[in-house]
Image (cartoon, rainbow, N blue to C red; front, side, top):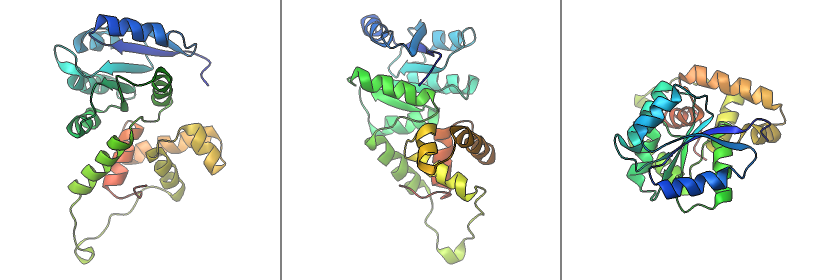
Length: 223
């Protein structure tokens, strides 16, 4: 799928765990660990020195911690995908990861093949949330949206075209560019053009935020 290896920054404070991850991921020809860090501060400094495609970030880091590190990484590099590693997928953590700008998370006990798939997905622009996280995202948005009577509110015009709504709905379902192109019978390049237009219209920097904003504003229907 990728002719050039995906360049990964691995941020993990457990040396043995980090070594095991590196050895396993380096077996994949399309993945390359180009740098490693034991804490968020070091990771943020490395971002300024090395071109990267994905950050694989442990949430339980010393120092500023994984959540704050993710937030600062996204502030510095809004288009750089961050995939978080965590031991538990508690709902409050999921909400904080979304607010920090993460593209998704993997549990530390995940099968190596699934981790590789998750890295590929976020590198291609998709997100990687499991069913628990997706449910939490939608219930959180539903809770935050005030339930006003229809006669007391005028719904804002939807800035998205019908095709853009279709594509954003498929993004919300976790589809990649190629899968969307196949489903809609259009070229992958056309999908990229539409996604660029969606990000511009919604004034966001990545797909995850676009999906969240669209669900919150009811620009697309929850699947």
